[in-house]
Length: 456
Image (cartoon, rainbow, N blue to C red; front, side):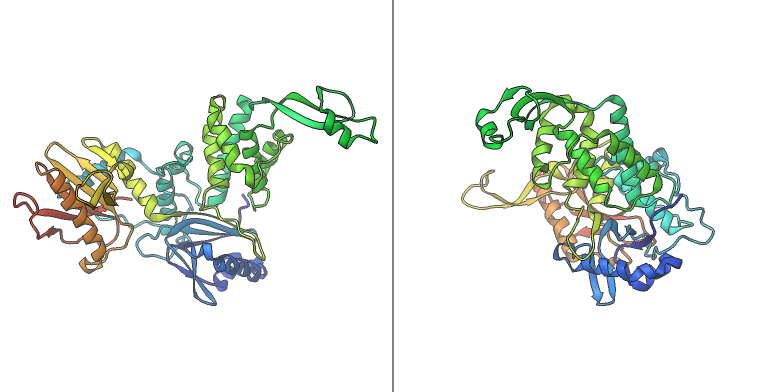
């Protein structure tokens, strides 16, 4: 199957025009235009968080993963696994993403949650590139407020399919399912100049427009139309796809869907928020819910960054810290045996001002990533998507942050033991000595800090 030429990179990996030429092979003549478009993209101030200049001839990825497409060429940025570059597959790799076993993984998470568990040595993947793709898909499948959970990204096997094609294929499949169920219509009041009399004659407008055109009638009438807010949003996404480089299979699906939505006008940029508001308020569009989440991802997400420059580029990028945090939270919640609360629910305040400490005077909000509650114990988990090669690599700021969490929870719940964990992704170096905070907080108790490594 023909796919878009793709350069694979890891987070914080450097690349230049020569890498693009190597990826293109016989089509290397296209490399200068592609490189110029990427430089254009990187020059945009809002895109510095995605790509940075090391020098005028070299770009460096940041801690965002996903894709950038320019000039029919894709750059995929994948999670940095075991410190390896990810420019190509391992020799003799079948280019199949390793199969993910949820039950086996849940067992690994339960082992992780034991306070003094010894981390299993990480399996060195036969192909780091395929393994990095598996980690990305597994993390996307647990990302909150996105449509990825319903599309089983963790079960994808073909490593050759570009990430953008994966997203578009999932959208078009949802679209075809909706079409088979039947698109919703609604009555709309439509005013227009017609060659026949239909509905109510708008007399003043009729006189303005048809003073010398006696054969026309400016009228308004209620018509049962497909041109409603949810369909307009879907049409806007389909129009967006027409500007991208797609695989033949996705192009075929796009053509079929566009034919069905032919009479629908796409939402304009200025009307997108209004159309989303109308769609969510109408209960009769319940069948559109997951497809509209996809529309939100493509049309409104800040990570999708179309820009105006010499060339047109599209980026769909996600902060790896958030992906890892949601991934850990999702699997910890599934583990059972604990009362688990996640960041948005873990709201406490470090300080207050004024004579009394009440809700009105609280300041410096604290939100630990994950809190596990047991009958006599509270465990606070803070996720860090970082490589940790030795004890000295633990950031002082992270330790201060954990101390603030620990002291606050120990003060608020003096009857319970408090423990804090710094949670890093599974990596080659996992033998880091556990630490104990020296200050005694309540009742002479010391607060234990554990360095934990979450399986990937």
